[in-house]
Image (tube, rainbow, N blue to C red; front, top):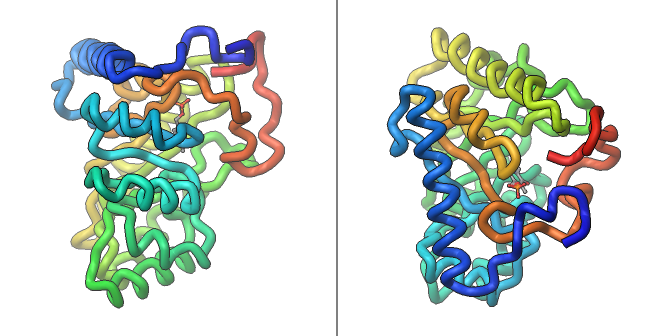
Amino acid sequence: MSEQTTGSFPSAVTTEDFVRNIAQVKARIAAAAKRAGRRPDEVRLLPVSKTVPEERLRLAVAAGCDVLGENKVQEALRKSREMADLGVSWSIIGHLQTNKAKDVAAFASEFQALDNLRAAEALDRRLQAAGRSLDVFVQVNTSAEESKYGLPPDEVPSFLARLPQYGALRVKGLMTLALFTSDIDRVRECFVLLRTIRDRARQDAPDGIGLDELSMGMSGDFETAIEEGATVVRVGQAIFGARRTTDGLYWPPASPPAPGPGGGR
Ligand SMILES: *Cc1c(COP(=O)(O)O)cnc(C)c1O
């Protein structure tokens, strides 16, 4: 509980802790939606459970989580096996190495980080073979940080135009990670950019390519994301408690140091 953002995210260790944390996050989601003139039910809460061990995940499920988001395929696959008795759905929200497409096709219900055609191809082939389909979000790099995954904004329309050939992928919308900074105005710019890209892409998106969804916002910034149109917020620490593992293990190497005092978000 000593690192960066940890102080405000106490660890949830009982079902009651989870019930309380989830209720608090949902209340904040509802308030942010109302401020923006939106209905609270327009925003889906995706609890992000990376690094959290099975015992505590079971408590979160008992508290009502029926979909869990994981950044790494291997970790998600392991947990999905450990918890196969619970009927949880798994959303993969991190970069996919093509050689893991088989695993994702086998157990995930959603993939939020599609940013290259090789992955689309590999997923589609595995899904077709398994007779399954998968909800996908196209990840966009809205922060212009080289260390981030995601398509550059100007490549989104041509990328979307290629996706109808992958019939097992149900494209739902766009996903982004905002800039790592405590400067909320700069974070907001990333969210505005994702919405703008979506609105433009919609005009000539191919049939069958859905762009209703915007997955943006995390524990430190989900209210801002909702004000800018998020339909999915990916919230880990505000539900599960602070992560001890540094996020460098979950994102590409060498994230630039966050500008401004405090750093974390
Ligand atoms: C970990 C993670 C989140 C959630 O971050 P928190 O700070 O725990 O809310 C959201 N999106 C992605 C892609 C993540 O890897």
